[in-house]
Length: 294
Ligand code: A2P
Image (cartoon, rainbow, N blue to C red; front, side, top):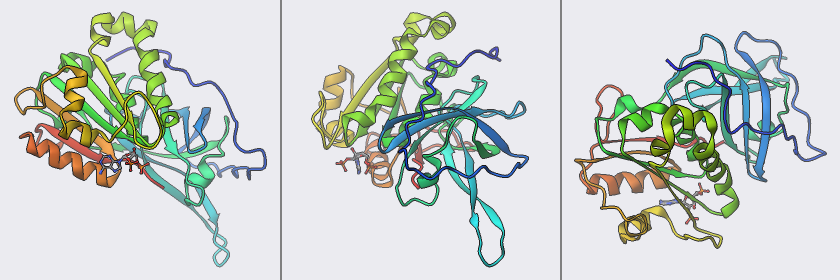
C-alpha cells in the first residue's frame, strides 16, 4: 500500500468556460456528493477535472465509476433525478483525489452541463468502481500496449501512474489516436510530467519510467505522425517506427479504450495476432472498454 501522496501533474485551477455559459445549479446535498477541486479546459471539446475522494473509496487503476449532476426539475412531478454517466477514473488508485477527463458535447444531456463546473461545485459520485481495464484481467507478459482514441486515454492516465504497471512489464507502449493535435495535449503533458515527476522518480526510478513509449497519431490535422493506429499496425509502420517486433501472444498484452468502431477493429487485429480477450473472471491476453461519450 502506497502512502497518501500529493497528486502529480496537478491541474491548474483554470475556469475558462464561456462567459455567458449558464451556471451549473448547485446540487442538493446528497450522501454521494463530492467537491470539485480543479478544472482545466484543454480544447473547446475536452476538459479534465479533479474532485475530492471519499476516504473509504477503493478502486483498481483503470476502473470507472458513475458520476453526475442533478437533472432538471420534472415539471409534472416537481422532482429532480440525478443524471449519471460512466467515467473512467484518470487518477491512479493511490491518489488522494479523483481525476476525470471528459468530452464536451454541446447538446449532450450530461456534458453540456458538466463542462461548466467550477472549483467548489458539487458532483454526484456513486463510489462503486468497476471495469475490465485492470491488471487482474491479464495474464503475465513482457510488454503491454495501451491503445486509446480520444477520451479513451483516461483509464491509461490512471494505469500509467500505477506502480504495478511498471512491476508487471518490461515495456509499456501507449498509442493515442485523435482527430487533431490539440486533442493529444492532455496525454502528452501527462506523460512528459510523469517522466520528470520527483515523487514518481523516487518511487519507481528513471529506468522504470523509461519503459514508457508514447506513440501519438492524428487523423484530421497535420502532426509528426498521421494516420489511424489500426492502419499503421496493419502496414507494419507503427512497429517499424517504434523499432519493436509485431505483437505476439507469448509476450504481448493489450488494453483498449476508444470509440466503438475503433474497439472492434483493434479487437480483430489483436485476435489476428493470436491474443485472446480476458475478463476479471477469466484473465487472458487483452481487454477492451468503450470510452465514455455523452
Ligand atoms: P478518423 O478521423 O479517421 O475517423 P472520434 O473523435 O470520432 O471518437 O475519433 C477519435 C479518433 O479515432 C479519430 O482520430 C478517428 O479517426 C479514430 N478512429 C475512429 N474510428 C476508428 C477505427 N475504426 N479505427 C481506428 N481509428 C479510428
